[in-house]
Image (cartoon, rainbow, N blue to C red; front, side, top):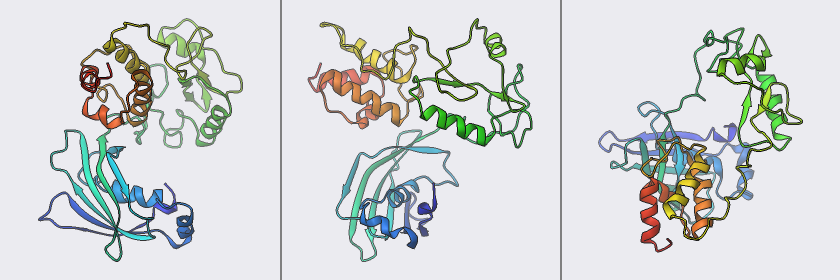
Length: 305
């Protein structure tokens, strides 16, 4: 994450107090000028909370939310992070309370309900080199430096990313797999997938980049269409969930997180729910009510539907 994250100066754990730990943090001297402009320094705050997960014993988790963050004063360059994991955390989650304490013992910030969720999709983690699938394409996107025939070279991948960032693209984008340093022909991919034609190429996209879009495809980034009076509220929620998750295969009792929902999707979904139902809910509500049926019941309890 960069040299600002090299800020852990020490750690203490008491075996008689499981789930409790104390970390000493110190922003490197070269970056202490940051504090003049960033009173809640992101590198210090990130380090202060991320050690709620024990990398030696816990499977991989990613941050999901803060239930409450109270900042009492600007973070100093040196502080202590007192982490207390909640022992009643739901399965697949880590929930912790964290106090950020200055060297003189003053509490400068408090975090309550910092939540991390286990990651079950390891597609972005390092993968072993493979020889590719039946069409010669490596589904894991192996590093071409480990496997000489399959994968996109870092230099090419970086250029493709910059090309995508420079133009307006659809929400979904497909990058053609590379073999022997060249994109796999579209005809080979279409045949392998049982398709009959190539997707449209977006103007300005770099080599090997194929956005999935047709003139008839709706722009998912647009606000949801207005709902006709009398439409069932659960149906409206289902439509919002389908839009946020990008899938039609869900029902009233489908779990948002089991369907692959993450914190970014949750932010988008709750924003649309606020606009649609006129209610001020945070993403914590989605964590507490992770199904359409449960969230619909909560909206009814709040008197918004």
